[in-house]
Length: 156
Image 1: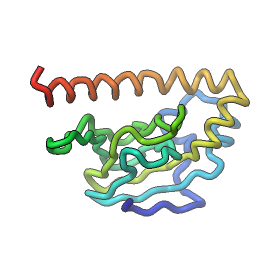
Image 2: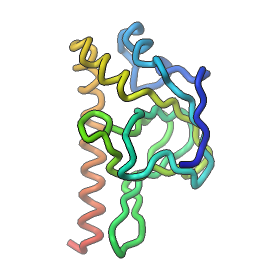
Image 3: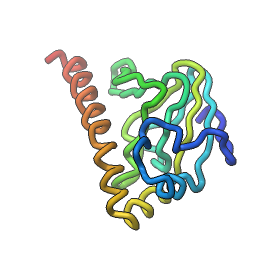
Image 4: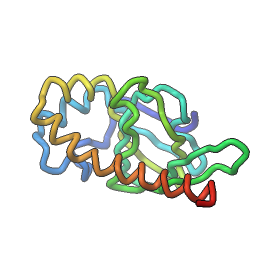
């Protein structure tokens, strides 16, 4: 994996659009163990099959979510940018990435620790429910984009 992750981030989860309207103390707890990421064009954030251990908040740049198919060129399912979030495979076992994610241009993210997220979502059902309500449309959109690409790959 390319790119650079570092602790003691300058980026703050509370400043990301995804967390607007959330309880500040809840967002602060979720941020425990957050790592700031810097990626250049072509750097991988993660690869399909690797452990899904982070939830990425995109602050700057662009990221391609990619699908690999046997005997086919790699396909971009969707390109995301500032204000978007990346990664939901950490929500349910086996906690493995289902796609690849690659920076398209210089990108900065804040990566929240998946175990911390799962623990805090369980410990605070009201906040956890709000979090999942906010994340569900993202998951639905990504699945729809994957469906479109699969239909295109198979010529349906």
